[in-house]
Length: 163
Image (cartoon, rainbow, N blue to C red):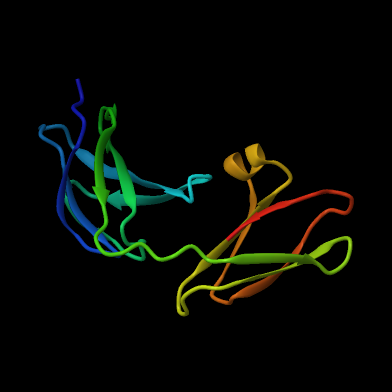
């Protein structure tokens, strides 16, 4: 039986998490698959995937958001197959940034101008869909460091926007 990997949280801050991965077994490990999950504004679960080569590893995940719960799931690739999953949960330190204030205005039947307020020098995600279910499961999305973006949409549809 292949055991699950061990995730040890080494440190965390307002914008990063450092952790080590190891297997308590003599089975040869070729690498790990790491998924980091977080929920954006209770509507959208985000994920970042890392592919780690080798048996033991110190990893640092940066560009995270302050005061946000993150879940790390890991499985190992071994010579005998994939291991079961391991999980770790961490809440980053600091103060969570205020939510931006979004205004969306139709320019014409296929373009919507989105403007919002918020801090400079950060990356914003713009999510849009025709229903709350689609907004949660599979929205259209784009990222920018600006405070505005023109989004192209289908004519004769109503859209929900989130930034």
